[in-house]
Length: 339
Ligand code: AMP
Image 1 (spheres, protein in one colour):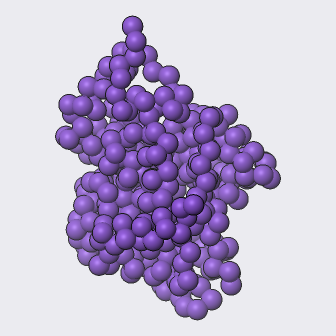
Image 2 (cartoon, rainbow, N blue to C red):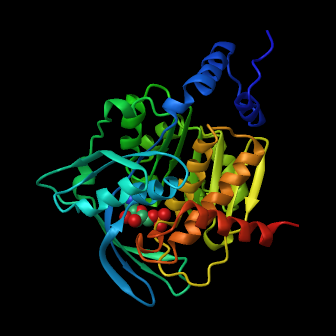
């Protein structure tokens, strides 16, 4: 029997993803008939109070963490469900900020006698490299995610930076998501490798920094490292290269994109998560289509959301920014890069 034609199956074919006929029927049915009800993007990750020092300024205990940066950026494109944990020091004004951005915070657990995760970092003069000064896991250290019932049908899932065991616990509770992408970093690569390896086998895509891709694989060339990641489970990998842009690699496709040139970099914290948020938010808004055009547009939107966020500390720059501002910068970027 010939495969059922749908824009989605074409997209997945471009990644050479093989589906059984039954799975294609289920997928097509969900896509065509249920998408308006089911289209949702779930993120799980750290929620933090960050202390950031740059060569020009310092801020104490500002909102950060992988889940907030991802969720806010993705909120420009689609509804988002955020899963994470905070302590009694969580400020209700943040819940309100996310609500306004279309982010559902019912998945945030508040531990009444706990303290929110804290991270502090200091940027070098180039504003690209940084040193972690302190990591206090606090409530994140014992976090056991429990998804609200309506989160379990999420089609698109992003497992942000955090213990890989948390990502695995979330995947156990999902009713079979269509696209699962994860991020990771040196702390987890160095300390929880068996869990990370298990997680890698259950994800479709990995978004990772160039230096972390090298740490993960032992390779010194980013393209070789990306190819090595593909042997560990994911069907595609996106390597983030800071101010040098990003690269998408699957078995048969490679796309590269420069970074948007930002003159006024104030605080690069969260750029990677905002990049992933714009990227996944756009893919979810296209119902998970993964054809080449959609992937390239998703890389562009990720690049744009990241470039906006780094122009201010924490979430400062996002205030007042709308989807049309994002699209305006996208147009500027298009003119810069088309040839
Ligand atoms: P990025 O700049 O995209 O790497 O993201 C930085 C954010 O990650 C900060 O807001 C931190 O709170 C958070 N973060 C730092 N270290 C960790 C960690 N070990 N696990 C989870 N999140 C972290």
